[in-house]
Image (cartoon, rainbow, N blue to C red; front, side):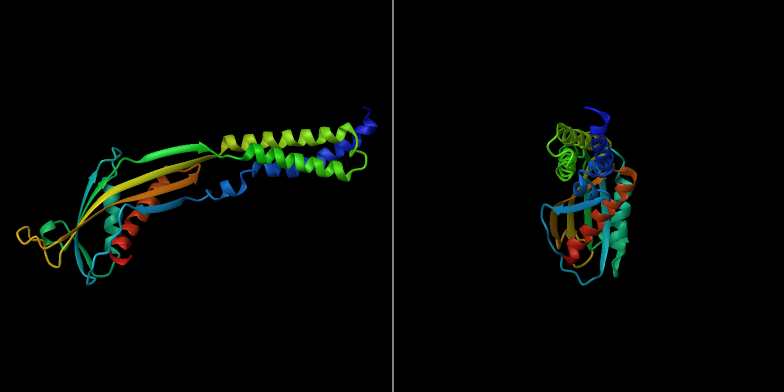
Length: 235
C-alpha cells in the first residue's frame, strides 16, 4: 500500500473522526440527557382524602429510623407544607389538634450504575460513517482500505463510547416514610374516640446523573411533604 493510495483513506478518516467522536460521547443520548436533572417520582401504598372545612390544627410527630439524622429535616419540610395551606395552624400539644400526623422515616436506600449503551451505539455509528464514506468514495469502495476505514471507525466509536460510560454514573435514592393520620372534627378526646385513622407509606424515588446528594435531599423531602399534604386533602 503506497502513500498515494492511502491519501483518500487518510482524508476520509480525518473527516469522519469528529462526528464519530460526538456520537460516541453522546451514544447513550436520550438515556443520559433524561437524567441530567433530578427526576423524582412519588408513590403511595394507599391513598385517601380527609374531609375538611379548610381549618385544621395540626400536630406533627416524627420518628427517625433512617440512622442518618433526618428528623429535623423531615419535620421542617412537613411543617412548611402544612403551614402553606390557608387555615392550617400547628400545635405542639396533640390534645389540641384536629389533625395528628405521626411519621416514621425509614432508612434511605441508594443504588448506582454506569450509563449504558455507549459502546454498542458508538461502534454502530462509527461503522455507519465508515460505510457511507467508503460507498461514496470511488477510490475506496472496492479496495481493502474501505473495509479498514469501516472497522477503524467502528472501533473508534466503541472506544469513545466506553470512555464516556466510565465517567457517567446514574444514581438513585429512595426515601420512604410510614404515615399514621388521625383526624377529628374537634380537639382530640381519648374518651370519645371521635377520630378517624388513616395509614399509608409514602415513597419518593430520585434519579440523576452523578447526583449530588446534598442538593438532592431537600428537593426530595420537599416533594414528599407537598405530595403528602396534597394527597391527604386535595387529591
